[in-house]
Image 1: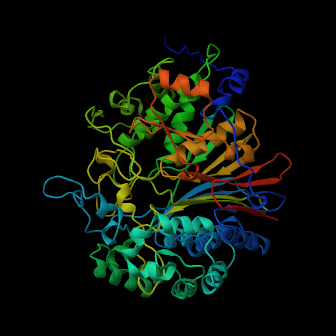
Image 2: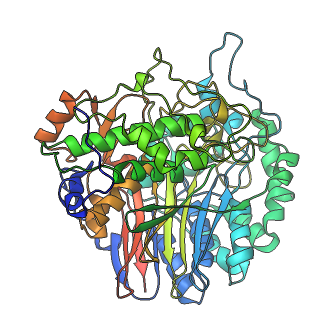
Image 3: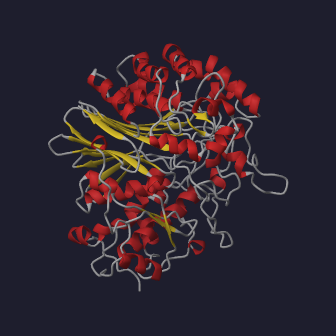
Length: 593
């Protein structure tokens, strides 16, 4: 039986049937008071209370949302070393209320000049996955310092050194790791102990130290405060990075650092019913994939659906199709052509939607990307036709979800959604000797051998192959949702590809299910990413009836630990009240004033 489609779905139907998309059972834990807060003037939500307080203090002292984002990011490099960083990269989405400007700062890492397509492939054609995920050869050229400085230069207001001072003070103090950092240190102990600089600072006899100071990181931050990004990309910090690369056989040189540039881009904008979604453009895949899934779901008329589980099934099928397109078409816009207009075209989405069956799932090895170029207004002279490989169904690797997100709204109504990452927990495991910060392992986000899975189980193609200077595809998806033309939700998440489905479900929960933001963030989640052909579900996300229906339609279900994704979000209520929510899955905090 095929799903019946009509030009317009009934709003009342969505409030009812689609209300339970992907989230049939809501069983949130009760969050600590610090994870939920209402305020009238400013709000900061991050994954660590100390960092959120730093940001709120910057807002109180007259700084704007970009100022607070810089200060919070630098503080996270101290108190959340498994994810917060100056040795990684990220994306910053900014809305300036005075003129309704939306802009996007891309400070994603890049491949060093010595990198090449077969960097991690041996003579037999096998990928050395550990070399791409651990150690000096896994490191991409860091972008965080350049990106934060670019955002501050163009949109900040307080002095640069003022914004770094709180992080310097945090690094100088005796620091007590919270439970989340202790768990991360335990999970990544084997990797850390291969590279003694970080291990000696944070571990004692294989366990997290009860307290530690970070004087070398404090000095690095002081240098950045006084000299700006030149110190990191051309000066003393650049020299320390190059020495570290030589020590461990890494690829990054002073020339790689000096040539790095953060880029200001135009964000993507799309609609879902009467909402406008402003989100990340490539090299993030998050925005395109999110808009595709919402576009596919908007076209369904679900009046005939009565069985529990059918709406979840439809949403999972839409998600699988969007991820198939993601892995085939998306990459670094400075290196490859992408059919972005085609991927988001209503006509193209209609062709994809018509392949969804109401009563059976499509096996992923039979599900290829569509021909989005046929719906693009500017197709290239020649293009590769996507195809699926039915012989390869990869298994998900053990995932470290160590990305982190920050949401900020200031007294003027300016908003920042910022997502930053080292990729795995503590990135490559390599701490720069004498500088006190970890380096990323983002080279694993390239397709080291197109068609083979990375650590998140994602399978890509030639478009995301390694090239010198290229930015690896990302799932990070900082997002701002507008209602009636005004910012309504500021949100983002961690969790690799689960970032995209987490943001999707939070939006649907608040808009369709009429949940408040606290309920929407805490609700159980599902995740499907095309390959591997598996639906992951958190405990409590499925009722018995929903589970039974999904299994009958052919979905393979697996448990997903709740700690694998978390979101930090702000809702702007009609009276202007700011409602900040840090995900109860982690130890974040909302701090407002």
